[in-house]
Length: 149
Image 1: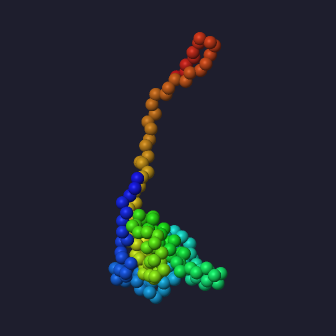
Image 2: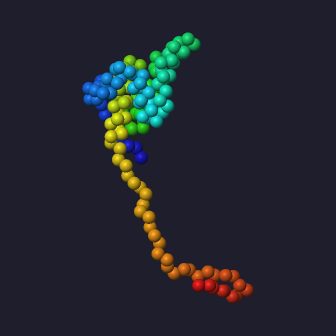
Image 3: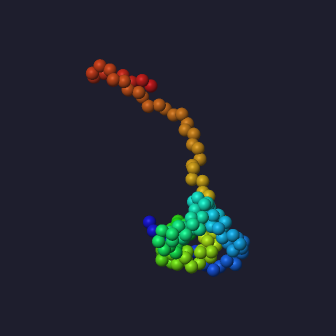
């Protein structure tokens, strides 16, 4: 069953919808990135790979412009919540607007957490009343049935 795709709760440049997230991302983007990673259920240190990966890959002769952790988390959030978009847009956003991307992901997770509805699916306990028991049939000699009540 396919679910309808939604959009991000806030736009990429809508930092003033949540000024606290915007300030957090502006003054300490690595801290915000680690917070987003933890809220999404990943290792909090995952975004630190983005700080090291360009230097390491450049030293090996591999040009890398897409930060792997930012891109992976953006794609993961988009897929988990059924948000419209494409991998190409995620790469462009992660490469050219990384701080705004982290702020948008943080706002998205905050909004999704607010809108969670908990439903108790456990049925109420049922107590069975004792009723008549079925007869127990024992096998006896051929042609003879012995029953116990």
